[in-house]
Image (cartoon, rainbow, N blue to C red; front, side, top):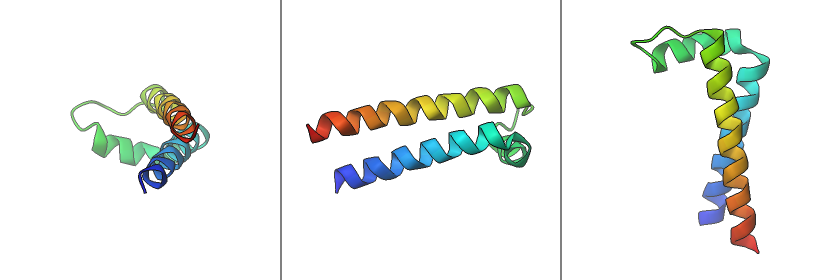
Length: 68
Protein backbone atom coordinates (compact mmCIF):
# COMPACT_ATOMS: atom_id res chain seq x y z
CA UNK A 1 0.00 0.00 0.00
CA UNK A 2 2.91 2.33 0.71
CA UNK A 3 4.23 1.97 -2.84
CA UNK A 4 0.78 2.82 -4.24
CA UNK A 5 0.74 6.08 -2.27
CA UNK A 6 4.22 6.87 -3.54
CA UNK A 7 3.13 6.19 -7.13
CA UNK A 8 0.21 8.59 -6.71
CA UNK A 9 2.55 11.25 -5.30
CA UNK A 10 4.93 10.82 -8.25
CA UNK A 11 2.11 11.15 -10.77
CA UNK A 12 0.62 14.16 -9.02
CA UNK A 13 3.94 16.03 -8.88
CA UNK A 14 4.77 15.17 -12.47
CA UNK A 15 1.37 16.17 -13.84
CA UNK A 16 1.39 19.44 -11.89
CA UNK A 17 4.91 20.27 -13.11
CA UNK A 18 4.26 19.50 -16.75
CA UNK A 19 0.92 21.34 -16.75
CA UNK A 20 2.61 24.40 -15.29
CA UNK A 21 5.29 24.38 -17.96
CA UNK A 22 2.82 24.00 -20.83
CA UNK A 23 -0.03 26.19 -19.55
CA UNK A 24 1.26 28.72 -16.98
CA UNK A 25 -1.59 31.14 -17.71
CA UNK A 26 -4.14 28.54 -16.57
CA UNK A 27 -2.26 27.87 -13.33
CA UNK A 28 -1.68 31.54 -12.50
CA UNK A 29 -4.97 31.89 -10.50
CA UNK A 30 -4.01 28.84 -8.43
CA UNK A 31 -0.60 30.31 -7.68
CA UNK A 32 -2.15 33.66 -6.79
CA UNK A 33 -4.07 31.89 -4.03
CA UNK A 34 -1.18 29.66 -2.92
CA UNK A 35 1.41 32.44 -2.82
CA UNK A 36 -0.93 35.01 -1.27
CA UNK A 37 1.39 37.76 0.03
CA UNK A 38 3.63 37.61 -3.03
CA UNK A 39 2.55 38.23 -6.62
CA UNK A 40 2.48 35.18 -8.88
CA UNK A 41 4.64 35.75 -11.95
CA UNK A 42 5.32 33.42 -14.84
CA UNK A 43 8.90 33.09 -13.65
CA UNK A 44 7.83 31.88 -10.21
CA UNK A 45 5.28 29.50 -11.75
CA UNK A 46 7.97 28.04 -14.03
CA UNK A 47 10.40 27.66 -11.10
CA UNK A 48 7.79 25.92 -8.95
CA UNK A 49 6.85 23.57 -11.78
CA UNK A 50 10.48 22.64 -12.42
CA UNK A 51 10.88 21.89 -8.72
CA UNK A 52 7.71 19.73 -8.87
CA UNK A 53 9.23 17.73 -11.73
CA UNK A 54 12.47 17.36 -9.77
CA UNK A 55 10.53 16.12 -6.73
CA UNK A 56 8.68 13.60 -8.90
CA UNK A 57 12.00 12.29 -10.22
CA UNK A 58 13.36 11.96 -6.68
CA UNK A 59 10.23 10.13 -5.54
CA UNK A 60 10.42 7.86 -8.58
CA UNK A 61 14.03 7.04 -7.70
CA UNK A 62 12.97 6.20 -4.16
CA UNK A 63 10.21 4.00 -5.54
CA UNK A 64 12.68 2.14 -7.74
CA UNK A 65 15.06 1.62 -4.81
CA UNK A 66 12.22 0.29 -2.67
CA UNK A 67 11.28 -2.27 -5.33
CA UNK A 68 14.83 -3.59 -5.81
